[in-house]
Length: 430
Image 1 (tube, rainbow, N blue to C red):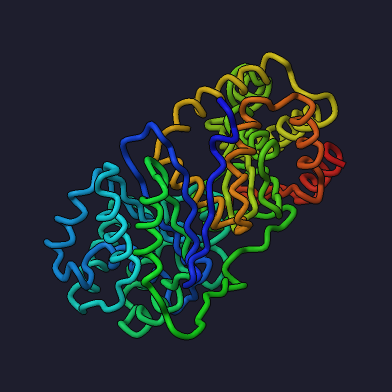
Image 2: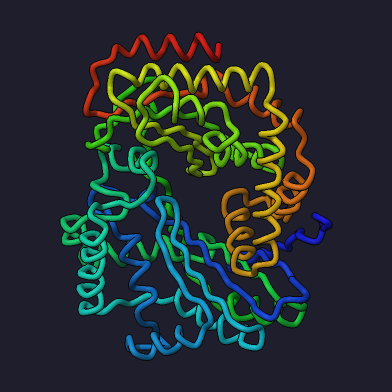
């Protein structure tokens, strides 16, 4: 496998939309992923949930497909269709056989460019979202750290909206946010699959027709993201007795750093990790342990979650931070590193020729980095194939520092003195 085969191309169209594309010569399919700047990062208390609602509305009808039946039939002719809202953006995905690329491009343009919403559509989609919330049993189904970051900011009721916040959304608020978010300069489209020069020209021709007057760029709501304390409680996760030990990276890691972070994410609590053995069968009565990697505003959070009885959370924190210090100072066990490398390479070989995964991956890279180099995937493939233990340890030394670390405790038992946990951070990582 040659990493250079995965250098994608980036073209900034005259209207400001960015198209990132990668030709996979042997593919028979093409996949389009559009990422729109939106999500609760850009919302306020007054329009909370509007991004989630717009995700639904843009997939409901359009100028060319003015009824739900017409839009449903058009989407149904695709091999794959999906949409979702994250705290930072809104995604739309379409996949089809390469012979229908032009039809798929026109359809994604219809989805993105739609401007007017009928009152009946708005009320129906609100009701559908409320049903989603009820079926999920809570108002945001993201991981605990994302929920903490966005739900307790003081400005939002929920990352995805609530029944009450949706009721407050009138047509004017919806239209205002839609006009600011769904603009070419706020959007990246990733395309992957069987794409020759003629195919790319057709895609750019369709997407270039979209022009919007004026400048109404979305700006992040500065009060939406919570500022993480060095040691704090998690009031938004009411049932948690857990301890969360996290590390913040302000700049999104790439290449070897990104893959190293993935090793920690997937392997810190997997056999043959010593930490896995200690927490599962050792000193503390731990109900659940896990490690998660969350991308937030072009940075990253790596956090360890362990659910334990309140009096044992100091033992858990002690074990976790002690293990991380050993990794930082002494490197890692060769057997563990080889196991993580095997897992990473298996994953890579499983997805690297999947047009759906590729279109999403290159769209995300251009959305977050906006550098037009097309090198992000090349660096990732190269790192998965060739990462060394020295590179991994170098990243661990830069990550596991006191200034990057925070500890949060479940609100059910906020009785432990914060100074004990602050002392642990300095003891193990200083």
